[in-house]
Length: 243
Image 1 (cartoon, one colour):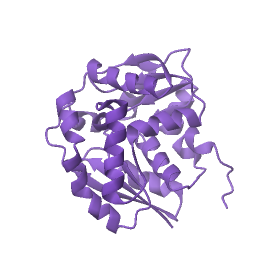
Image 2 (cartoon, one colour):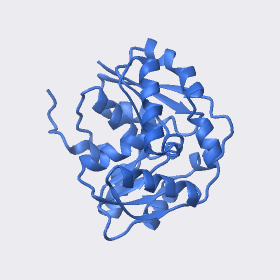
Image 3 (tube, rainbow, N blue to C red):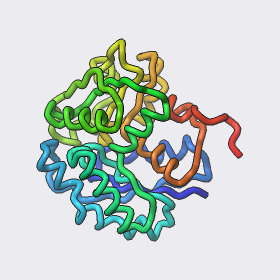
């Protein structure tokens, strides 16, 4: 059994995690603990507060007791707004508090882009433009070229959680660029776990989404590699037959 832990802000698209657990196989368990987000807003100040150490620490003990082998802060906006150095400090603090390997969704995107050899990416963000620009800057610092970034101006996670497949596809299409090797959709409030093969077929290139890369990152931290094509190109780097 591989047990993985996630600190998830509030309640939006957490039902993606049981869906992904089902697709990954019977020996992988995904445990989600909810953190208090404070104000549901996509402003820089609100996101900084959402990712503050005291809000994350409140859920760490529950994850540790669950037997998790690794923990990921399942939030993009509440990590990249700190910038690369601040996001590293956030993860180090989480690792110390949990006594476990730790990461965040922002670092998951950077690592996943490298995993699929996507040197140039397009970003389809639900956030306002100023917040979306901070994600682009974060990726650039990590060595990934961003060819285009599209913000959507949505100011609450609650609104994003209600988007259906057509909304998600429209977001990805608006962001797509012929020079992009992959399209990134950075919002863990967005339901994407059931849409990945359809999105990649429609766009004819890899699509990386927040919930998808977050789970992949936790598996990476735990030293577990899984082939799960229904979770997109990112999960097809390993042979189908697992040891």
